[in-house]
Length: 510
Image (cartoon, rainbow, N blue to C red; front, side, top):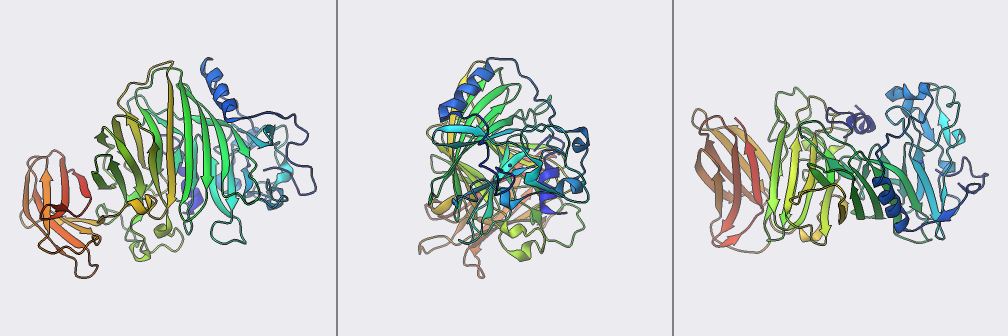
């Protein structure tokens, strides 16, 4: 299964869904014939405010019927012409390319280019694309807009414009740090995920791309969001690098009360791993885009929960009065853990959300859904405020979203969980847990203790030792369950009064 297929088809999983300028270099600049209008960040906010005051209207289908019925392979046979890339002829540090509407993406979105405080629409043209033999002729009739867009920049080498970030489908987007290949995605908002009655998927209806200055290391994108319950104005300041960073500012206007508002949602895939292989008969040791969720509290507590592919929908909630950050990470970066020459799962980025300002009390929520196929993104994580979201409310959320290897950055520090393994215990019905931790900073001496707690049942034989191979630590214990209910487990290591590691958190379901 090709990676782009996994991402594209993955947007149609059971909970729902999880580009250019000129047609060619000889044409005038994109939008040159279109009327320009004044633009600022306030422009998008006012559009969102006005939209929220009106009843929601589903955007119309905007492609010919033949392009509504494109197969996956046909859609892939439509390619954007590099010569038509926005900002290519100007030699700017970023270039924009656009996705053709059709397949799943039948309601085009508007794209505008901003320069000198003026915004002009980027017109769609079939000359911007090549149509392969599987597609045949370009669409006939008027097409207003694109499915989405991607931004390219010299990420890995100074001489080649790598794909950096893509916005495609609903409010989905994804990005890469240096050395990464695409994996997990982010969204603008998640509404009523895993709630009775189904999920609502807000959509980015229109984009504005600010023309970057020559030599700039930042490109700015604005987006207008709409859905039956909310509208929103988003600003993304995108900085490529070893860790690609997005500074996100959002203003949300609430049309009607929202039962569960998911802020800064992340979406990923976990099929099986070292802690949860299930019954998959596969040559690969592990298949996932993320292997765990990390949650940091402002009080200093740091949690790590390995992901699972559950038998039924599983929702975990981590409450805090002050959130420092959370993210879905791919900590295991060894090729031998995956043995997949096509997917290259060891190169998947993690994504880290760091609130700017005080978000108040709330919970990081993790939703894990059962799946039998890796094409489905079955993992969702987001922040849910404690305060109710009422109709007429105006909410502001700013955060820094980082993508890459160890996206939480230099502040991570300390010893972290490197592996979780589960096996039969020494007694009938018991389960054995073996946890590996990375090497701790400092040169302390003395015995290391594993502090293990269980919400029910009995913890047997807890112990910890230095890992002779990695220089880190290994902890092991057994759980004798009490009944058939789920058991919440926690473990951290300490030496005397010094805490050495983050807290491992695990929900064991017999």
